[in-house]
Amino acid sequence: MDKKYVERACKRYLAQLLGIIVVLFVICESVMTLGIVGDITMPLTVSWIFMLTVGFVVSLIWKKVAISSPESLPTFFTAVSGFRMLLALFTLFGCYIAVGRDNMGEYLIIFMVFYLVSLAHHAMFFARINNKK
Image (cartoon, rainbow, N blue to C red; front, side, top):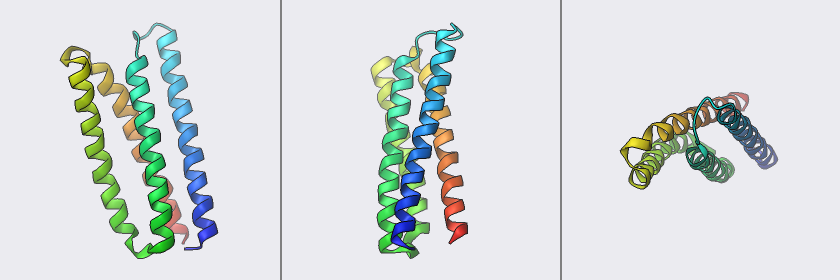
């Protein structure tokens, strides 16, 4: 792959990721402000930090792999899926230890929304990138 194309795609991925995080954050804050749910500040914070961190790391590693050895991209995508799931499980386990069983419902729901949206964005973005080349 062309280095300029990969760098532009990486920037576009991060910009889209930030936009998605902002939209999800605003939706959650609106739901909380309207009184539909209680205080979900901590689950929301854990979720957007997870999504941003994983997305940033994935984009940097993808850029490096796409430039240096594009034939390894299928392996990279498989590894990222497994890594993201394990990291999500460890994150939720940490939340479980920190807040206890009774408060995990909010964390699970909000975290899973962020996780699934992140997964869908990742899949659609890189499928389109791979189809274009």
